[in-house]
Length: 73
Image 1 (cartoon, rainbow, N blue to C red):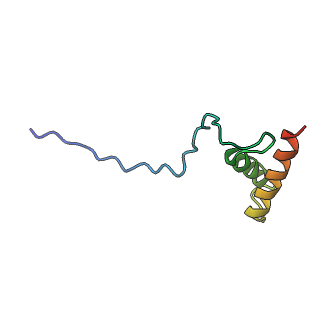
Image 2: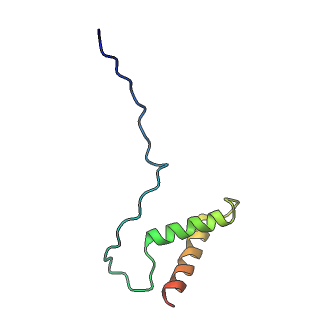
Image 3: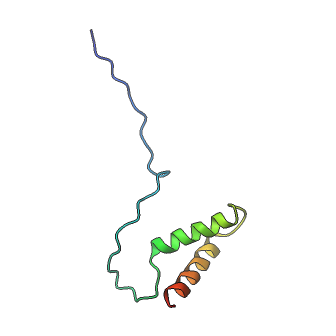
């Protein structure tokens, strides 16, 4: 009797959020947010407007401004 194998469909990782990476020394001055922090804040801004119309570039700039302000306090 032959053994049957089942094929699993490939998993796409684009829908799986990445775990936060460990902080590393990037040579960035204190008070400057890193890319991951800005990305997460921009996504929070997107969610605050319930995914409604908006501009990703504006969200990014707003996130950067907010984080810079928070980090320099």
